[in-house]
Image 1 (cartoon, one colour):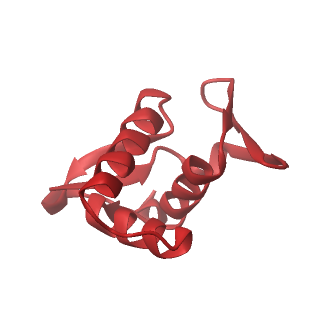
Image 2: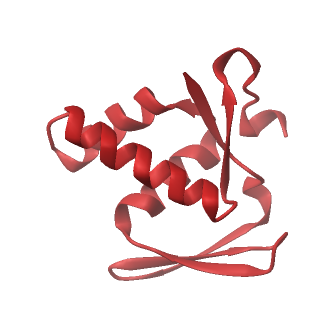
Length: 102
């Protein structure tokens, strides 16, 4: 099981343009346009690290949708996409730091 954390929450700058969000990463100099669910997921991980299951449960609750296998696949796809954008990273649960420790 993995824990996901924001790579460096302090360097992210947000701009909200309904319905999307733009996030600027001060370390990489890149700006990313995120739809509502990936943006919400990144904001969750800015507060503290969470496991895939915790992210899945929280997002299913907020979206008022079934927390089923299909939702799990969607959550994992979002997490992997955020990871590929270098906005989050994953650790094994036993070695996961929280963003508050960084």
